[in-house]
Image (cartoon, rainbow, N blue to C red):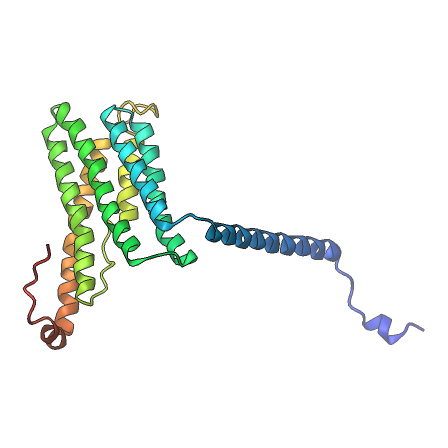
Length: 241
């Protein structure tokens, strides 16, 4: 007579052992990857690398991108601009991760970011001016001005105690738009594309719209808490030099 334990035992699932083995291997792989990242992070933190060094490398790469634009080497300029911009995003993350950040480092990073945008767009404007394309050159000027204003409106809003990260043309978006224009510019050896001028038009339009978005956002935030904020800033004239 069969035992009750044999009769009630659940059937074995085919391949169950194999799945458990694969899950175990995957788990070990994840743990090994996490341990490797943790080890690499610790070694990086213990090194002499500083966030300011990363910022300066990004700045130099953007200067190289501008120089390459003047030589009509647009693809190489795009690569240098992309790598330099990635460095600009890494310095802040590394600063927070390593604890090596300083107030001056944050100031230096913000300052270099603005210069980098301006110098690359200035080189592009020079290229259009040399070709006699005055409209595209003028749009470069608008793109520079509006990009700077996107950053300024956020900085000024935060000085007033208002968080201001709204808007379409954040720095990553601006980097992507200009990178597409450089990599797919005329003569960039990536097909018969001429996307540099259109990317400048898009950049100028999006940046200008973002400035308007941020001004409107700050106006609403200040109006919602007007009595308190006006009493705190009654002595200020609103001028920033």
